[in-house]
Image 1: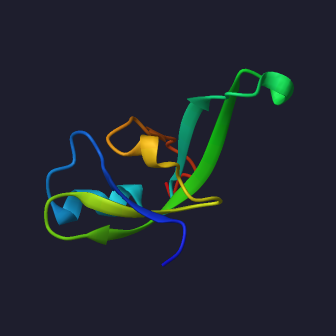
Image 2: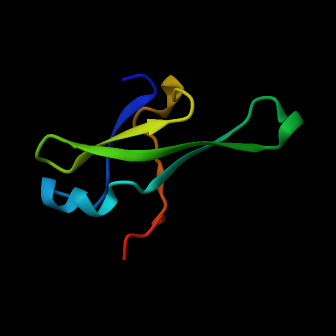
Length: 83
């Protein structure tokens, strides 16, 4: 369960709605303290499973999220599409 975080997606209120988001990419964007590699950076992840009955999902990231990411916004990309 390393690199895994629980994410509440806005507008998703029950377990049935989370099935649309399974497999979608998520991105945590933040400003870098050291600007050698650019002003902003991204940690990419993927929605892996639902968690509970209230629309919370488990997301697996490439690297662990920093503690300041708790309660912060995470962007949910609507790809890859399963249509």
